[in-house]
Image (tube, rainbow, N blue to C red; front, side, top):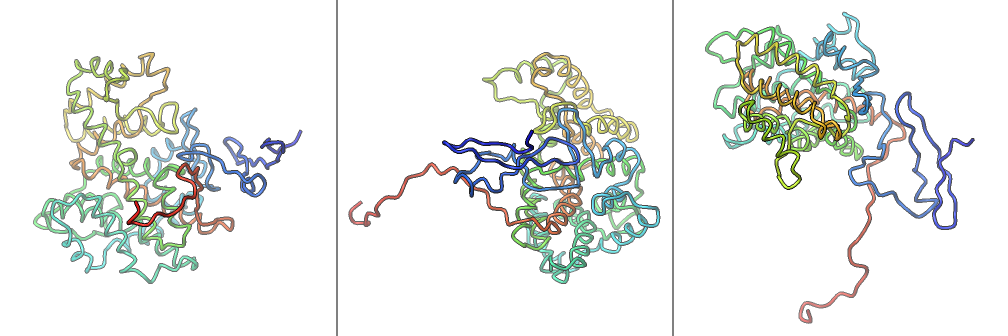
Amino acid sequence: MSNDARLIAGNEEHSFPVLSGSVGPDVIDIRKLYAQTGMFTYDPGFTSTASCESALTYIDGDEGVLLHRGFSIEELSENSSFMEVSYLLLNGELPSKAELDDFSRTITRHTMLHEQLATFYRGFRRDAHPMAIMCGVVGALSAFYHDSTDISDPLHRKISSHRLIAKMPTIAAMAYKYSVGQPFVYPDNSLSYTGNFLRMTFGVPAEPYVVNPVVEQALDRIFILHADHEQNASTSTVRLAGSSGANPFACIAAGIACLWGPAHGGANEAALNMLKEIGTPDKIPHYIERAKDKNDPFRLMGFGHRVYKNYDPRATVMQKTVREVLTALKVNDPIFEVALQLEEMALNDPYFIEKKLFPNVDFYSGIILSAIGFPTTMFTVLFALARTVGWVAQWNEMISDPGQKIGRPRQLYTGPTARDYVPLDKR
């Protein structure tokens, strides 16, 4: 039996190789489809198209599985730090203690920003959205660190990767400080990656800042859960921008711009706003009925996922983390009670069971971030901070792939056919 896939187009039969990965469904290699048939495939959203070969992240949406380099997200979030997971994504293996210490020192040495970037921040309006600032500042990094923009040089790629991972917390914290009118706080190299970010965000020069270890661990776990997620919209954007040979800072800025969309990185803010709208548990049945009504625009945010058709494994970790944070901070948040009861009612409702609408990572993350003290405008910024390591790892993998080509999707043209031009005075 042949391993090829056969396609009948008109009166001709064509054969295409079937490729197998280490796990997951096989793929049909259609790179020669146009040459053989004169036809393209039509796949809006690329939901049935593998755009690249990758060894970074694997998702089984039906089973609710998420693996980074073969390690489950549950084990990584329970046992590893974000720096460990970052090393894993970049290098393919978990580090030894010496390797982790060296990597962490390298990242720590790159946390400061060029001092002139502080002036760049002051060019934004005071009420600018932090994501708008992130897009601009990250894109501008290539103007300040042009000594690491040669993508053909492995050392340049390594340095720019470390710089992006290291400087993103500083950039994010400064965006927050600028929006609330407080002075920028410089990095403290004695703190962890996540502890340093908390201090730069919530500390002030007038008094010492003590990092809450429960909050530090919770935020570090959130970073791990958002580190990479296969070929999602923003990651695909980074790869597409990178395929043209653009410098890494420009590519990551493109990813941030894509992540800003409410259907992608803004989903946790939308979920939190929905829970606030519901307000109290007694109103949940009313909103569940609204969600079932096709004529009602209301939708349950934080439920369902483009890939997962089972319980999002990240949501299980997040639910446990919510309890830890609220207990440590002595927060009695009625919104969390709404979330718990909404989850229970939805998971036992035949409508949601049939449509496989399970809670996703965004359902709980907004509650945690709000309890820590982040305004909703910072939620997507934190997502970008965490996802930077995934974007960088994906970009590096793409640059190193000898089969990589510049992205150039095709289209199904439905506009006018060729027609004669009519001069302006005769129209």
